[in-house]
Length: 137
Image (tube, rainbow, N blue to C red; front, side, top):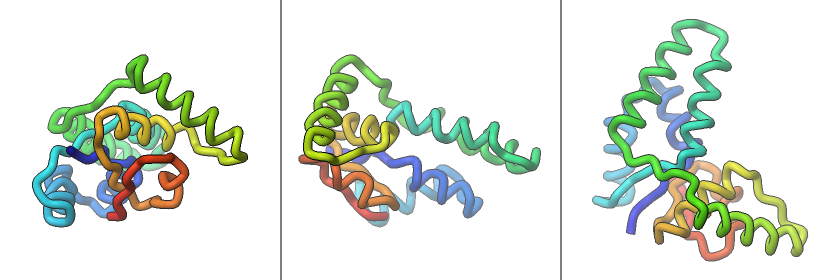
């Protein structure tokens, strides 16, 4: 059992000027001692934010946060099994008229594949994924 941290949790912490250590401590206080990890797609989203920053100071802060995060946390790659699970979920949900953003789909499929829950600020996005336990932070 563990948690996949959604990008929304990480981005909010970085914007508040928190360190990775502080974000992870908040996770531990809220959810107890549990393994916390990332989906590789969250690294894409965080890296996007580095290059989208308008001010150099924001770019430097975001880069430092992302480097610390990827150094200190497990980042699960998009494996064949996760891709197939995501495709199945997306196909089944699309057949019912439910659309799921690709980023959320991959994060959710990563969690399901590992038997983990997702911790997020965007519960509604992840509730569209059947069988996924979604925790509000």
